[in-house]
Length: 130
Image 1: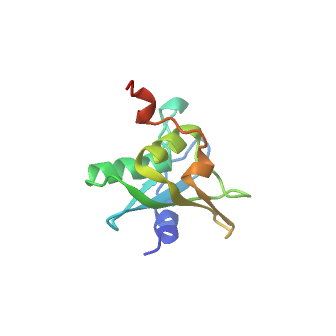
Image 2: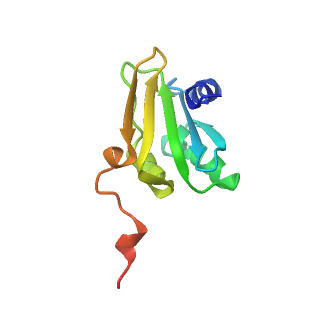
């Protein structure tokens, strides 16, 4: 199954009763395993979970550690980029040159690298005091 097909399928299981904005994400690890996530809203809005964060959590729970590629899909007029928090989460587990494909349900897509999504990324190296 392609990442787009996996993201499209999991998007349908999103829990979005408040915004009705369903998002699906699928990632492939460097080992080739695929993990998916969908957004899960909560009436207390800040307590929701993004699709990208869900896929990353599933990867970590499944023993994965590095993202080789990622696909995100939403029903929006243009490809929807990950929120700022998810960009940082993606950068934690993906090299700067990893491709992130952003898709709409009507077939539009945009491919970006992690570096393009989050220029000036904060990394563990910033905490080193050599």
